[in-house]
Length: 562
Image (cartoon, rainbow, N blue to C red; front, side, top):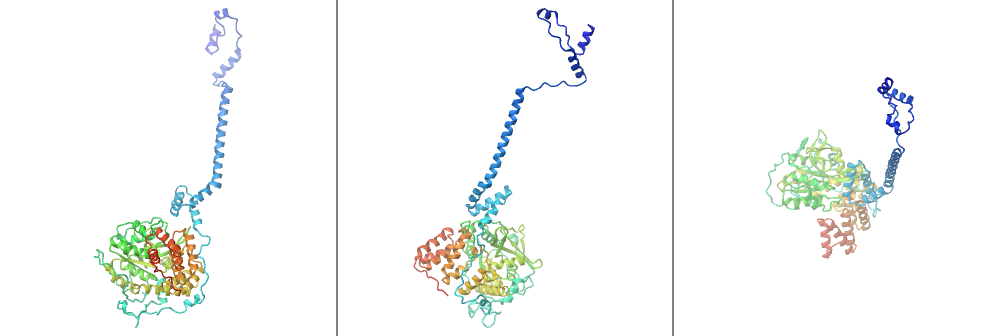
């Protein structure tokens, strides 16, 4: 019993069966006591007995599940790889086709979305590539009759030059001149265009403006500008910036936005939308010309705000400073380089300048206004790119300021004075730099406005041979005028076709000049079709309306070649 109890204490079972068990059945085999002892000794020593092996059925279930997961993962991996390859081969082609079928505005929206959310410039690069024509320049044209060489345009000034004299009355009465409009000398213009604040002012000829009489309106509470119109402008000046309302342009809307910002200086309370709806009812219209902006100010904005506007070409930096110092907002049209899109036109509102810093201060509807304080633009860049548009400027003013403005403008109060100044500036630059394509183009523009169409055509052909940017004809249409008046209709049509192609049919002047050619050739039905297309695109394009009326009233007269 003692031995049995000790074994029971250490966990070994009592192997003696009970009596009743022995009575019921035979004695079972005795367990292997040595094996039991080994197991108990290991357990007492802290050694765990081996776990029983998992049943074959559980292991099979786990293996199947693992295989299923691996198969699904492989399938997904194959799917995504295939999808990526499919996108690269098929989807990208479909995306390209879909994207290029969108309107330019929608292309811009999706370009911005890809850049913002996907950090991808694929669509922006695609747009830039697709918008660039095969020939990135204006097509060259066959020369005219060859009676005028480009060098002939540079030999002698077309107009009498000087500061006045017996032929000019400086009293301000334009009607008492002998007919010649005095322009500053080419050297004086060139110096003023290249110099900063230290340049001598141009010779001034006071001429009464010949614009349409202005309505009599009560002046608003605006201070009369104090700087002297005849003395040199101060070294720096700034408009009252609190009177201006900065605004960022919407899609393709720099003209209406810049004009609206200038109008707010005189109490105009609308945003860019009313001007845009009048100037370019179709948001894809690539251009708003200065004459259209003048129409909006003088015919529309003036009904609610006491304002008027005038436009001149051939301006100088000195004149811009005089106007700003006298308190007049000035809009200039200039070239603009976009890194991924190339050259295009742009409007800027000038609000101040500083000779010490050699900078103009501008409100730029695209690049901003420096938090309403004026964005600095160097004199050098402003003057250079301003020259791409023949130094065009627009002045906004109140009607009661007309006489004072004329004193500031001097000879530029007469529109032809500015044209003559532009011509002589272009001739001077082309003489010193015959490879300057903009000088030749500006020369042709000035000759066209003066009615010297053969000289204009010669200058334009020289500019085209020097490879003008392909967007030039989106904004500047004097080549159409010159060739049309010379009867070179095939050249007009060729330029119109090029304009349609590069602008994606979003510049109405292509249809307008094509309509003029058809009318001059007696194809009145085709002419009316083109001109009516202009009005469907922009109902406020009055030259098309006037030509349609002339055709229908049998009053259309083809040009006489000169």
